[in-house]
Image (cartoon, rainbow, N blue to C red; front, side, top):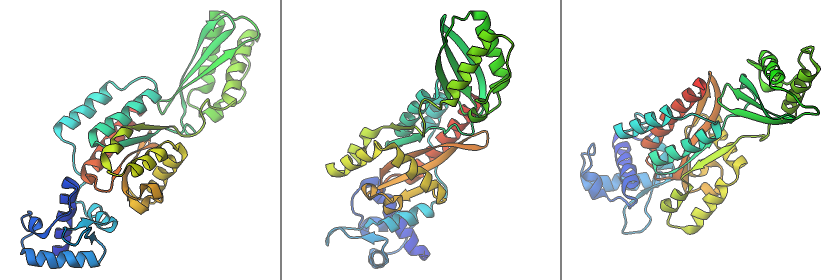
Length: 334
């Protein structure tokens, strides 16, 4: 643990470097609020912080910049995660007041919202539907032999299946099949709901019900987690090295890697992973801030912000926390 003086000096250096991206000298820190010692004392403490691995001096004549260890201390000792400003809070409120429709569109827009709030790349992992229950069922006749099955799940997702029938079917039997399926499916998970249901006594209606359940047993149209990335172009403004930007952008295209990264960070009890803590070499100069969002008390998915290690952690934590809470609430309300 650092003593109070070293801790205040380190926090001042990290905050200044996050703000300016320039090495920080002792003279500037001497003028900082909360640091009331001479520049000579500050230089000695900065040298000690460098020896202990919290700072590094990029050039002999330059000031210091934080190391990964320095950023970690800064994040771990943040008094609060910060708060969004009034304009940002209003932006979030307005967004979720009109956020309706299919979940894929909502999550895409949510990633863009989070990116705008933080000025970094945002990632949203969509819900995995294993635990979601069926909220409503609707059959829609597209033609005499083609019917669309639409299920709305408790996590806000919409499942669709196109059913092709051997014989023609009228609206009356489509309505009867909808009512029968609603009684059988609503309140159950997809896995439990796709088992055989009791016969209705009408062969045509039973054919449609059977086709619907068979389509559900066939599996989801898109297995696995969906990843929605907003503001990927902001990476170009975060790093001077083109190669770094290219490697991060290539990584963002690997959905399984991104999902595993976010889950791993949360499973380790972290909300922030810095540099090597991500376990991914292309992210050595990056940090990620993550939070789960819950629907009906269950973890449904994850959101995160990916940026340089010199990101504004307080703001990013506030944005991720606010958006994750509002997203979970919106999905739960349907």
